[in-house]
Length: 248
Ligand code: SF4
Ligand code: F3S
Ligand code: FES
Image (cartoon, rainbow, N blue to C red; front, side):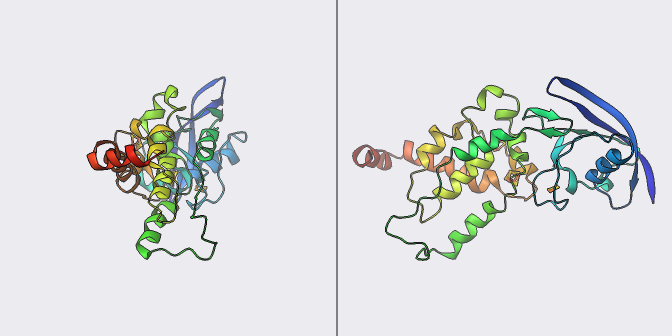
């Protein structure tokens, strides 16, 4: 069973562009990326789109469908009405390269700003021991496919270019939280989260968690626990006094 679907796709580059209308065949079981590929094959051979696995695992095909950040390869056509016009646009938070492809290097910059895992100096690799519950906590965060949909969605940077310098975004604050909760990491990540990665900008809107294709509870399991640690340090009088006396 197939039908002729109506699509509106953003075309252009960093100097400007706009939405173009297309009618494309849609077949049963297809996803939006199939339509984009058919569009390339039949009407717009120079249409730029980034993709790799077509299985929701490489994180390359992030874009916005009807304004909602999504993976193109995991968005089934069957969730839309046949008569509906489907709009496909590039991620809004990152600079345009061409058509549906954006420059996501902001995220690589932020990744490099998170100091790596720091195990105890007297422990050799292979001697690491930790509780299963701690392993499982990290595993949720490790499901991240680095699609950057959460980074694209968070209003702190989506609507405020000026915040990009100070705010690492949910994906990398989650990485900081993962390391802070890791029983063998010796670095103090609490002040770093607040001062270097802009945790205070997050006001827990949870939009990041809503768009995560891996269904990671970014806000509840990473950002809120991290905020609690910051608050404990700042407002708990005993912790505060301990910090004054014993921290460098
Ligand atoms: Fe994508 Fe989820 Fe990872 Fe964010 S946390 S980059 S939404 S997989
Ligand atoms: Fe942004 Fe997620 Fe916080 S959307 S404001 S990082 S809860
Ligand atoms: Fe790999 Fe969509 S093509 S996640």
